[in-house]
Length: 156
Image 1: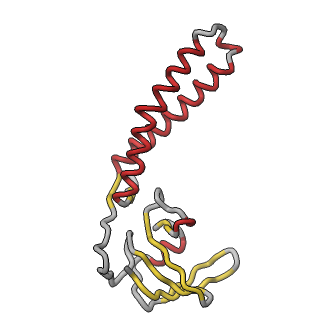
Image 2: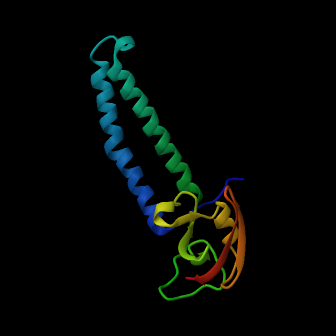
């Protein structure tokens, strides 16, 4: 069975934009480069031809990957501002306390995870442990540095 891909509306929009750029701009440019390189003669010693062919293969692979992903997408419904959840779900913004510090994360699908943006995957150890939990609850995660305890302060 195919695994569902969870994305926010924005995440899906960003990936569709990438797909459009690849199919309408980058791929035609590479095909043109490949054609020009092919016209230069001996393909066995033509570095430009080899580079263009490799780049085209990479772009075609990414286009295929995105098109396959689009077939499996489930949109994460965004919460109206100010609406609170009782339990942590995909799309929830969670504030936790760890080692005396407050941290906030948004739980997203793995394709959108970005630790720098405080977006953690539902597939990550922390994401998995948080899903379904409620405010006031505590979770414990095994990390390379040892066990980490998180207290759930707020869910948005």
